[in-house]
Amino acid sequence: MSGPGKRDDALVCGDTIRKTYSMGAEEIHALDGVSFRICRGEFLSIMGPSGSGKSTLMNLLGALDQPTSGILEIAGDNIGAMTSDQLAGLRNRSIGFVFQQFNLLKRTTALENVKLPMLYARERPADLNAAAKEALDLVGLSDRLDHHPAQLSGGQQQRVAIARALVNHPQILLADEPTGALDSETSREIMQLFADLNKGGVTVIIVTHESEIADWTRRVIRLRDGLIIADERKQEPLHVVS
Ligand code: ADP
Image 1 (cartoon, rainbow, N blue to C red):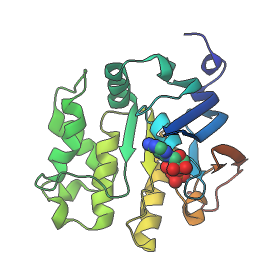
Image 2: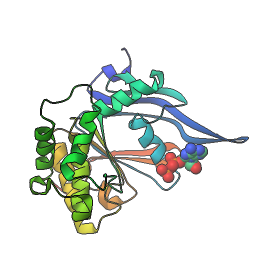
Image 3: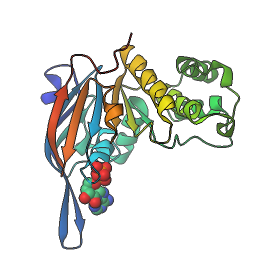
Image 4: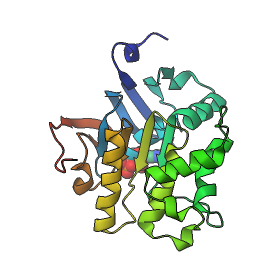
C-alpha cells in the first residue's frame, strides 16, 4: 500500500483525521483534523482534559473505530477501508489492550486469562501454556499462574492484563488509564514495567490525564477540543530507566 506510512519507520500514520458524531441536528467534532506519526519503539502518552478527544483517538488507534474522514494507517493497513472482520484481525494480531479496570475473567486463572487472545489468533503457538507462561514471566508473575484475579493485588491483576496484551506479540501496546485504579507506589511499578517493555522494543501508547504518568514517557501528545495542541518530545523521560 502506498501512503505516508511507508516513508519511514512509522507504525501509525494519521493524516487530517476527523471523527464527527451527529447528535440530532448537532455535529460534534470529537477529532477535528489531526495529523501525527508514531514510529516503532516509541513510548508515548496522550493527554488532555475530559472531552478533548482522547477516547475517540484511542478507539481509532486500537482499530475499534474508523475515522469519519482523513487517512489512518496502522502497520500499513488503511483503517478506513477495512471491514469489521479485517479490523478484528488487525486488533488480534497487532494491538495489545490494557484497561483501567484490568478486565480479567474472574473465575479464570492468570494462566487461562493470558491464553485467551491466542485462542482467537490465526497463527497459534504450538504450546499455548508455554507461551502464556513466558508472557507471565515477562511481567514478573511466574509464581502466580494458578491464582484467580480475586487472589491477586490490583498491581498483580494489571500485570496479568499486560501479559495477556503481550501474548500475541503485538506491534502496539495501547493502555487506557492503566494506573487509574492503582495506588501511587503500584502505579510507579506498572509504569516501570511499561518502560522496561518499551526498552525491550515494544511500542507503548498510554492515554492518561495524570502528568505523573506522562512524565514516564518520551513523547506527549496533548489534545484539546479535538485538536493536537502540543506534541512534545523529551531527550530523556523524567524517570530515567536504568
Ligand atoms: P475524552 O476521552 O478526552 O474525555 P472523548 O473522545 O470521549 O473525550 O469525547 C470527545 C467529544 O466527543 C466529547 O464532546 C464527547 O461528548 C463526544 N463524543 C464522544 N463519543 C461520542 C458518541 N459516541 N456520540 C456522541 N458524541 C460523542
